Image (cartoon, rainbow, N blue to C red; front, top):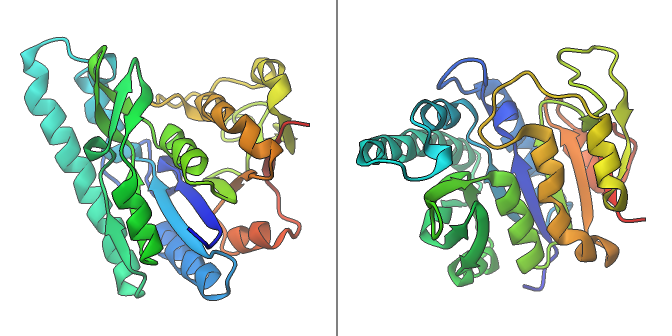
Length: 272
């Protein structure tokens, strides 16, 4: 791929109301889609893969039926099928929004190209994804239930997926967008004066994790601590120039400022 690739993860906490099952934040999706389109039009994004979290469209059913623990009984078979169907309703809403503003988004499913082992993505076939990027479409992938060689199936998190794609496809930017402006020492929704962490050095990750508070929101994918741990596999890529940041897209313009290298509150991930 000749053009610089950006892998952008839109978090479930950004696109959905995680406190209410199956509630999309339509205004946020509209705003995010429009800003992404403008970033493409202005050349700030040359090639794009969009990854989404499932938020309140996936976690309720996963937790209710203990799907995150892998195959336990045949009673889970119908629930796992229903979970994928419910998440697909959400994916289709995202695709529809981008098509309405004439962004050529194509929907792809990680469960069709990735296999895990003990919740780690181990085997994958990305040729079709690469080809869609080369065709200048915008592939959309998200959190999914993956076949797992040790557990039967497991939750494939969007964060881990975004990191895998950035690593394997040689991305220039890896951006995690959520409803908060990066990483804080405590959950800013519960502790309003929580201190933001502007720079996180992966070589000091354990110390950083000890400083962070524990989110009060039940999350099947591990919330912010899981997000940070998922970034570790691209340590060498960061050393070579991969730009990794965690931003909020609740306000229009933050993505543009980040891509331009201008001042915007966020957390930057380094290995310095």
